[in-house]
Image (cartoon, rainbow, N blue to C red; front, side):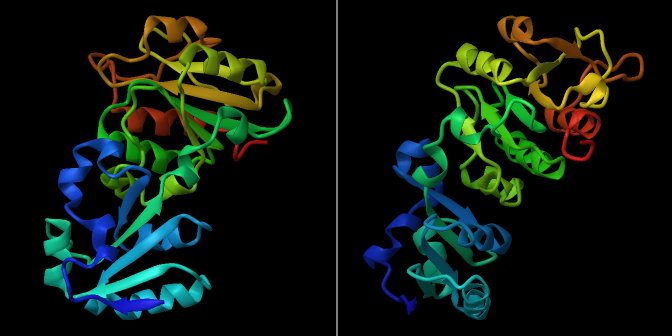
Length: 276
């Protein structure tokens, strides 16, 4: 399962060639493939059947790789070990931790909202709805926060940044891989679907009149929390579709928080994961 590589032109290295330059082109730079880096992320990738295409580690990381492969009984995963300088020469930038892996995007991308919503109109669930979040770090942090507060799924508007971008995965500490997500192709229709499936659509907005209350107040146990970018917030159409708008109480003169911080505050108060 593990092969030592010394030739920079080895075809098995193609997934990892010129990572930064290809990342700038988004998903089209490496069609169907995404890159994960660092030990926590790559180990999480290896726990998902059929996700990993190849693993590439520097020579000092071989022992770690052998341990992880044995721990998760991984089979049929092509694993490569290369000198650190060759690894960085292929990637095109310093990979100080010496661990990268390529994954098959279709395993995570090819899902519909139907696929990720928990079944049953009365089944407790929390969905995080992200509108126009274009910052790489914020996308990753929102997934990390979603994991912390037991979110069942994440719905992304069409213009959100790619959650499978290498840095987004790293910031999320790999939780992008474990929380089902869907990129909407028809935003109003998908928001309406949440409501028809029994979710109360709650928008975070400085125009909100309510403070967030526990999700299961009045028997409500299916919550879809919508958050927008820090400066623009939710657009008017999305706000109009919300069942209610909530605002976090803040000191005078402060009207907004980073979207990750705001989502954490709201999910701590509203997530159904710990209260039903």
